[in-house]
Image 1 (cartoon, rainbow, N blue to C red):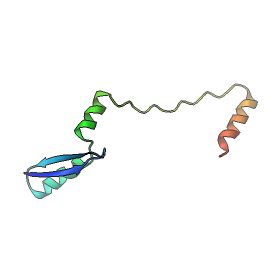
Image 2 (image 1 turned 180 degrees about the horizontal axis):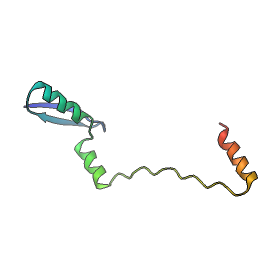
Image 3 (image 1 turned 60 degrees about the vertical axis):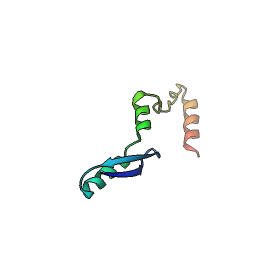
Image 4 (image 1 turned 135 degrees about the vertical axis):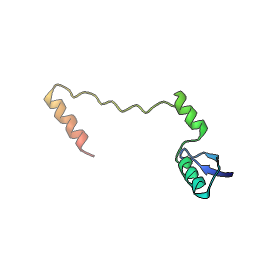
Length: 77
């Protein structure tokens, strides 16, 4: 049995245990390094971390003059 300490995608460090040939161990370690750790995984599954809310844009005004001014402001840096 092999035990490797791997830095997960979330930045935390976690031990990975694997049994078998060296190739199988390397595959498992590589696969596990791309996953979040147990703490972050359970936190996201429980819904404790809020999902990103997309930015809402205001609807375009009905007045064409105001709409043109706002479009010019958005276009300029």
